[in-house]
Length: 217
Image 1: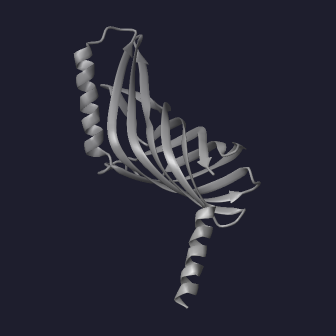
Image 2: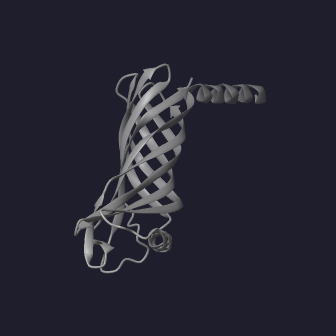
């Protein structure tokens, strides 16, 4: 009896392993911060939040239940964030916020065709580092003052923003050739990133990703 159970268990796990695939992926990320408050760039001058270009790299594991349905988990390192700029008196100040994060999505997948996968699910992300870059064009800027401003903003973000964020995503990928696939998704944050909001202020982050990946068969 024990031999029969052992043989059945080995067969079961062998079947699971046959349906489990590992892979890697990387690509372009376009992210934007969304706030219900005006952003101060200069004293008394407000700027608009805009999208920022970045990148992502990561690994994945997919388990197929059958030819149509699967579950996939990923771990990504992503350069996200946003930027804000304003022009006044011929001078433009741009502040670029780089929120480097570990993003962990878990998605339910549906294969509309053997090549085309549609998916959706939640994600959680964790802050790894914060980097701010301030650029001034159209005028003379003191680099030491800019560096001090960058460090002050980095500390302010680290002190006042939550280190963990939750959200949802949806997307699709298409197998191009023998495990090589293209992937596109949109993720939107549900967490108010501000630790202690005043007057119901909110800050959330959305991001779009497109890239290439490879699943090892």
